Image 1: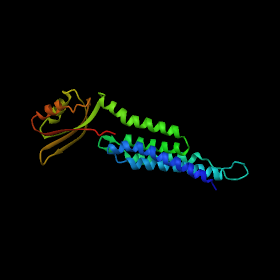
Image 2 (image 1 turned 90 degrees about the horizontal axis):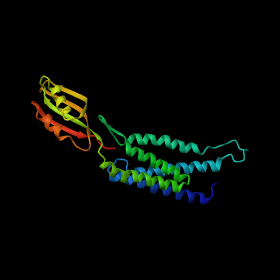
Image 3 (image 1 turned 120 degrees about the vertical axis):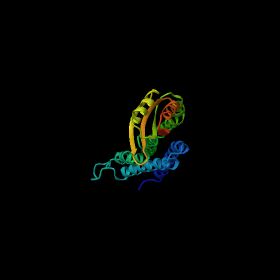
Image 4 (image 1 turned 180 degrees about the vertical axis):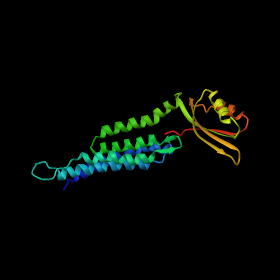
Length: 233
């Protein structure tokens, strides 16, 4: 049997793990992510409990004297937490055509699990520091990231009449705006006489390339043009 103070000690560790995990999840919840406040809390809570149980196994069944036949490695349960959280993180990653989102949320789940494991081991200061660094990276660095002028990717869709040489004219009009393009799909509709083309375009900064819309729209036979930015993580 374990002493009563062990349960009280572990209850404190688990509650701290829940609090720190919830703080990380709160930022994801505010930004409307699927894995938010409750998910991160439960991940950190479960991770801390796994470690607490692992320590309990070691204290009860550990072969301290060398006379018993049973030996327990307390690190094996924590190692399986690292493996298991990969499945949950993978479920947070969503692929939409050529864009991927949810990577930051998956990383947050991974960190929440690590914080739970650390709390379960009694590494309170380290857990608090990691939570603080995670929140700074999610909140403060996001604001800095928003001010940076960087390359961004968008999906350009053009619906046009199926005219001879139309695809070449559309491509030339896009490239004339200084954009790097990669064709990702093309559809011909013989019945309606439509040609639908999709391009991945790379732009610099946050500009949605309105010049590209105007230039492509001015071509003969163009029905509609749309540009959609890739979703953030």
